[in-house]
Image 1: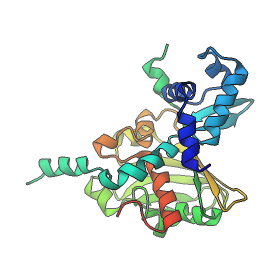
Image 2 (image 1 turned 90 degrees about the vertical axis):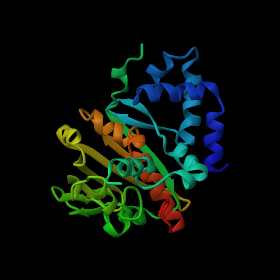
Image 3 (image 1 turned 180 degrees about the vertical axis):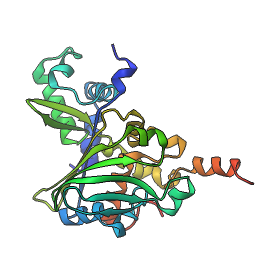
Image 4 (image 1 turned 120 degrees about the horizontal axis):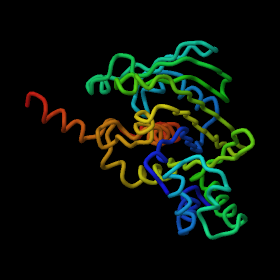
Length: 106
Length: 167
C-alpha cells in the first residue's frame, strides 16, 4: 500500500473522520478523552487510532505518563499539492500580491 | 462543549516521511543554500551548539511583503546532527507575534530501514495564539502562506525530486 492509499483508507470511515474532527477542535488528547466522545469500546477506538497513525494523520507523543494524540495535516497537504497546488499556489499567495497591487500606486 | 478556548492549541505536531537520508534532511533544515529552496525561502543562519544563535533572513519576496531583514530569531538548545535539533523560535514579521515571545521548536529525524526518513516537528506554542494560527496555515488567505504544513510538504518535494515545489 502506498502512503496515499493509507491516507484514503483511513479517511474512508466516519468514526476516523470524527476522531480527526475532535483533534482538530482540540489537539493533544489522550485515548481516554477521545473514547469519552464515542459510543465505542476502548479497544475499538484504539484500532481506529492505529489506522490513523499508520497513515500519519495522527501522531502520538508521550508526555510524562500520558500518550497524547495530535492531528498531523501534512499527508492531506501532500494530496493537496499533488492535484491543486500546481495551479493555485505561490510562495506568498496570489491574493496578497493582488492586495498590494490594488493598494499600491497602480 | 467545544468552546473557542479549546482551539487555543498549545503544541503542534507535524510528521512527514521523506525518501532522503537523515543527513540530507538535517542540511536542508540548517543550511541557507537549502532553506532558500523550500517553504518561505528564507536564508537560515545556525550556530549549532547550545546557546548558539539562530536567525532566518527574509527572502526578497518576504521583504517585499513588509518583513524585516531578520524574519525569525532564536537560540539553539540542543543540536545532535543529524537526529535532533531543539531551539527557541520567535517570529519577527508581525508585532503581535513578536510580543508573544519565544516558542520552543524540536526537529526529530529518524531513519527507517527502507531509505525513508521520518521527520517530526514539534512546536510548543503556549501563550502564542497568533503565531499558532499562522503556523497552522490559518492566515493563508491573508497571504501569510501555509505554515509548517506547507514548509514540510515543499521540503519533501525538494529532497525527493531535486526541484522546488514552486518556482
